[in-house]
Image 1 (cartoon, one colour):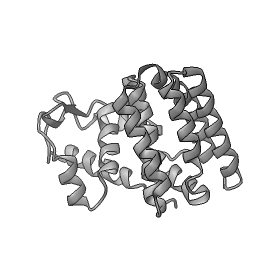
Image 2 (cartoon, rainbow, N blue to C red; image 1 turned 60 degrees about the vertical axis):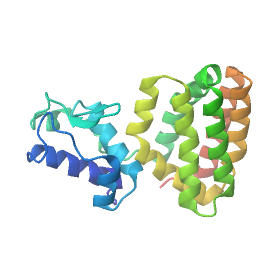
Image 3 (cartoon, one colour; image 1 turned 90 degrees about the vertical axis):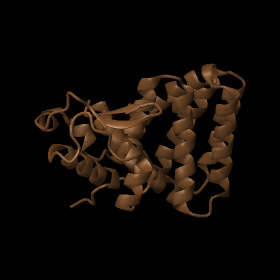
Image 4 (cartoon, rainbow, N blue to C red; image 1 turned 45 degrees about the horizontal axis):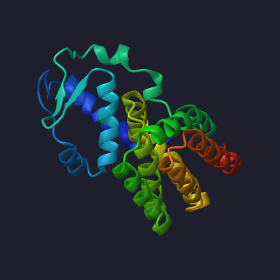
Length: 223
């Protein structure tokens, strides 16, 4: 039986807490920091679980206030609203196919819309990936770079989809970094250069080349 992902366990914890009435419609749930400390996990897994529930209309994040149980949320909603995508773990090559669809276009949008601060953050994430000595840190920096591109696209649907799948991304990127080390960072610098030059076509080409190269390297590991 496959090991349950951390964000799935958090998802189940939050879902059960709402279903059992621990948090009622309109209540504010604990912050990401408090939940991470309480459950002994990282904030990224908490954020991924919250994003799933938010996408289903169960939780609502309010800027500067916190995350609340939606007033329309009812226990019977859960069984009929949770799509299989939220619960199943995609195969490695399926994940690459999805990333080609989403991230190539996101890179093009980022080249048209990214500000100087976003570019600086992408560079810092890539520098951190190169300097990382542990797989987990390298994968975290890798994830940070790709998430920053999603944010720089300024398309909130792209951002939300990446957030919902963040735990799956992390699992995939940890596998990639374990095999390839920081090799992917060279592509990150190329993508970043195209974004800095506002060259959307080149940013998309570099992202596609990056994902295709990584997929080829990882294809032999597909069970």
